[in-house]
Length: 115
Image 1 (tube, rainbow, N blue to C red):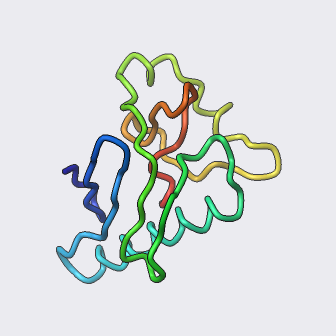
Image 2: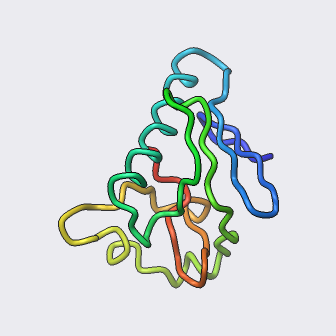
């Protein structure tokens, strides 16, 4: 399991399962909103820059994403963040942090775009 500020992520061989952390109400609500944002962005855009959301429970209580391989420190050092987030008529809503990206089917994807 990995812990973010607002969500816990359980990793299996094929999936990343994200649930809000219940540390305090405010952070729990932010976790719900992050899950809802990722599910909505995926549903609306289905961009190859986003890690696919495979399943989502309404209200943000849980999402299941495809599991991406971790982005290494050298991957991030060589990464052109500005070019990645510029998607033409929209901007990929992702922070410029190593753990916000991964490799999925041979391409770089945002794995944490629920900001």
